[in-house]
Length: 237
Image (cartoon, rainbow, N blue to C red; front, side):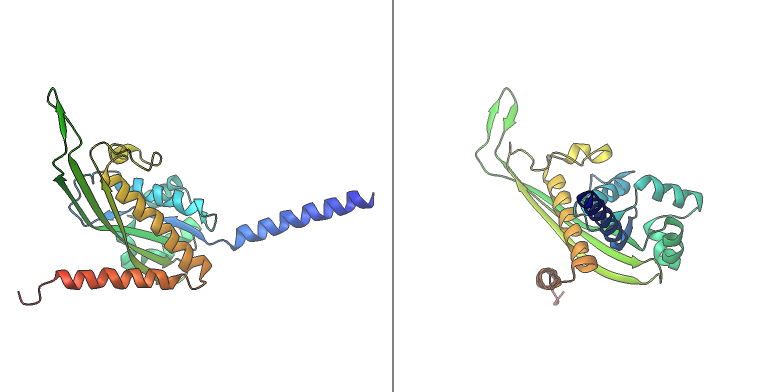
């Protein structure tokens, strides 16, 4: 009997601790991404697809309580509110209250570059070429985390994704691409997108949950990005 009581007590304790832990996780809504780049793969619907992909990556860390895209779209539509753009107008606290989210995450694709160069090693059979090309893709995403209680911006960071591939290389990432992005999953663009989103989820877990000194690595990466940007600018022009 004592063992049964003890077992029940331990079970209840575990459930309570799990519930408390879940409540301690910040509740987050990832809003529709916007685009300020010249990416050819950007078209209607991609902003929400990127939102869903980042939501999945953040959920995989088990550090957040993520709101579903359908709920976010439904609330914004009902209230006649746009997503990322309207948050800048001071509606962050209102959107957060309507969604029941503590934080809103917005993302803007601010830069995308892709180049393809011939390696000189391609083969051709019946007009079909195999190999011989090397492609590079670069993507920059500007993240903003908005405190939905105060409406203030809590964190900002530019996250970069880089990818390279040869003629017949197989993409590293098989899942997560659908809709208008489905054709990009095995391309350098798709790899750069996934790399940027995975790193974005790592950054958000770091600054919003862990806060254990991991910020220094992201600060150093941002310093390198800013230094490269300065070096690329010819101040004499």
